[in-house]
Image (tube, rainbow, N blue to C red):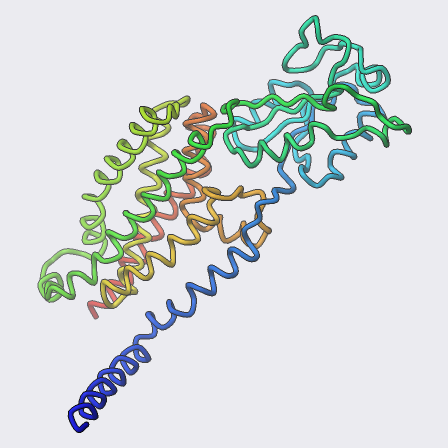
Length: 387
């Protein structure tokens, strides 16, 4: 009995020691509280699989009261909101390629005849009808960015939208109300959308993880005093820390895209140069973010915990798993701060929509600014540690 009591006392002593260390380790304690809180908020509030208010373009070639009523009826579904208006179809298609909209609604000039008789064949649709289909035609057409299957599915849900209110009588249609043309991924294969996004997730995880432990690793190995006594400046140290990992990030990207092409048939529609610029910009931003975390963490364990703290929102809010358009506005603001959100848009635009450097210039400049700001903050924080 005495031995048992002594064993219990020793266990309680170790327990007290661990609780004291946990209480003093505010970073770890904060992660214990914040990670489940963030998961709860993200899954309960920010994540919404019912996509609404998809930005879309309108090409109204009829320009009549009936076409305006049709437009209002479509917007009343809250599935889309018309943020752009164009006079011709090529302009709307360019807007989809550039990522300004996710779909375009084409109203042909003979809308009145189509609604009234469902048998008139007019010009203006992106895909002309075949001869044997001329007896019954859709009244309008959607052009959709099919690279995102959830966006495409939401638009396809409007295909059988009833026209009862427009006709002022029950509609009796044998064909869908709207035709739907899926661009970039007509087969609706999930791999086409997932593989490019997987590059962003893997690079976020590895690049931030590698560099988040860079400074604290020097302290734990006893090398910090040597670094202090060398003439190396803080910015030079930061650059020296991240440059080796740029090559690693490029190798990882090449492996993912090569295997994605060979196994899943994921194409590269755009310029390899645009893809390389986008990837380098994102790798730089991720490495700079990792360095900032490294100057905050006091141990490699804390650095790993902070990496998870960044990785989770990057997966859930960047558009990798759930459409960006389906998130509430506050969640979109948070997503815009994350480098993964910008790279997700860039790599999908280049690989799937044949976007060039001009189309991804905005996101590239943002990532470049993020990289410079991250390096500056990390250098200043490391300088303070030297003092």
